[in-house]
Image 1 (tube, rainbow, N blue to C red):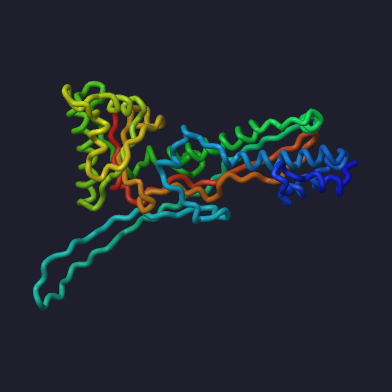
Image 2 (cartoon, rainbow, N blue to C red; image 1 turned 90 degrees about the horizontal axis):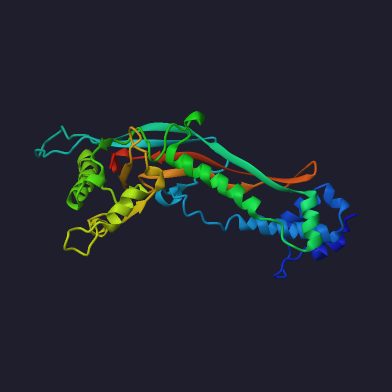
Length: 328
């Protein structure tokens, strides 16, 4: 049987600090723990705290939605719906006479778009025998299960931000929004350096023209193949500057990045380029609750930890600040 006084004495980490009190109470609440000795119980508490903490230190370089779409968590964990507005400016000023009474009105019109908050969830755990065996051998529990659970949820958040979740009330996302205009062009593999530069310039100019000069894109996203093409294609036969380097010198352009999700993302399953203003005033992804791990549950011979995160997908407030170019 578990000796609680001895158990509490053993609940110290390698740095001499006490295991978090919430973890201690979580472990003590498990029925099977009371049939273990104090060493096994304290071992499980220390491992559980360490593994739960490790899940927040993992980086996922291939999941880029967080890099490209600013995260907004202001709706909070209790939100069931997030409503955002897409705005359009109307009206214009005019020259008036000294006694004019017909001063023109200008306004900003907004359409409301409610989106449901949807949870991504999974679970991980260990059998009682795995915990006892690890404690007996004085080796760490396998943390890969917890890492896999975190990775799976982050993949879900990334997918929802990029594509939406049409079957769950989030019709589209960042790379396939019905509110953003798309233009089809000529594949870059068939173009010269000058022609590729001209295509990029045309896309940037469409943003300026369609918004009457209000919007300007500052970020270009490309499929991997097209990014590698311009990263290695000389600006001219006698130039040591690549097309990528030349474009990065353009006014307003702050970044040009590759993203595998843009392959076949356009109309007709064609590769897509996105130019947009990467500002939280223009676009955000609503993650109302970040990765959360619930207290451990004892189910049969297993200790199960359920985990989840919640999102409403991507909100594009000013669609005219973006442009899609397909079949590049």
